Image (cartoon, rainbow, N blue to C red; front, side):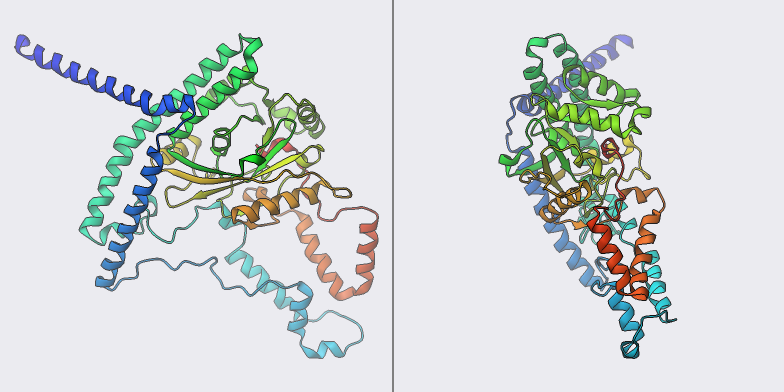
Length: 475
C-alpha cells in the first residue's frame, strides 16, 4: 500500500513546489522589482478602472431590481440628522427670539426667551453634533460590494448575489494572501536592509533613502494603493516641516512612497519597536520616551535642532493628533508651528468607494484594521502638495496653524472645524464654555464688554489659545 501512495504524495509535493515557485516568481517580477526600480506596469490603474465599471453595472442592477420590487434602494443620505439653518451669530438669534419689543428698550437686560436659544443649541449638539460623526466611517451613496457596507443589496437579484460571493472569494482567497505576503516582505526587507546600511557610514544617506523608498513602495503595493500626486514642485524640502490631515496610520506610507521623511513619535515595544529601532539606525528619526513627551521644551528643542540641520530630511507631523474620517480637518496643535521654520502643507483625500481608510482606534485594533484594509478592494487617494507657508509678522502660532489648516481643508474639499480632535476621548474644555458665556455677556452688558476685548487684543493676549500641546502628540 505504501508503494502505491508514494508516487501520489511525490506528485502532490512537486505540484505544491511548482505553485509556490510560480507564485513568488510573479511576485518578484511584477511587484517587487517595479517597487525597487520605482516604475509601474499600470496593473493597478487597470484594476481600478475595471472595479469602477463593475460598480456601475452593479448599481444599475440594484436600481432595476429595487424598481421591480417597489423597494427603497438607498438609505436617506443627508449631511446631518436634523436640518439646520444657515449659521448666524448668537446676538442675531437672540434678537430674533426677543422680537421687535426689545428694540424699544434703552438698555439690554436678561429675558426668559433667551433660554430657548441655549436649549435648542444643546439639543442639536446632543442629537447631531459636529464632532462625534467625524469619528465614524464615512457613509456611501451606493454599494461597493463589500459586506461591511452592503445594506442587504446582495439580496436584490441572483446576479448580484453571485457577484458579491465572487468578490469575497477574490478578496479573501487571492488578494489577502498576496497582500500579506507583500507586507511581510516589505517589513522584513526594512528590518534587514536598514541594519546593513548602518554599517556603511559613507553611503548611509543615499542608501538609506533608497532602502526606505523601496520598502515603502512594497508596502503601498501590499494595500493595492493607487495614489495620485499633484503639484510635486511643492514637495517638502530639507529643513522644513510637512504637516498633513490625518485619517489613518498608513498616511505615513502614502506620503513616504513619494519621498523620505523624518518621523516623530513615541517609542513603542514589540514589532513596532523593532521597526523603529531599525529605522533610526540608518536615518534621523525622532523617537521620544513616554516621560519625555510631556516635556514641551525638550520636544521643541529636538525638533528645532533637526530643522536647523539642512542636510536632514523634512519632518512629517500630523497636528490633529488623532485620526479623522476624512470628511473634515480638526484643530491643529500649535507646537509644530512655534519652531519658526518653513511649513509644507499637504492635503490627503481618500476615495471611500474602494475601501474605508479611516482607522477607528476605539473600535478596531491595529492588526484587525490592517486586515480590513488588505481585504478591501483597494486604497485610492489623491495627495496635493501646497505651496510652502511661513509665519507672518505679528502672527502667533495659533493663527498660523489655523491658516495652514484652512488651506489644507480648502484643497482637499474637507470641512474646516475648530474643535479639538482630543474630544474623541476627553470632555469639552472649559475654554469653549467660557467663550459662549462671553458672547452672551456681550448681549447683556453691551459695548463695555467689547471695549474690554479690544483692550485685551491690543495687549497681545490671544483668545481661545487652547492648542497648547506638544508637537509630538500629533503622532
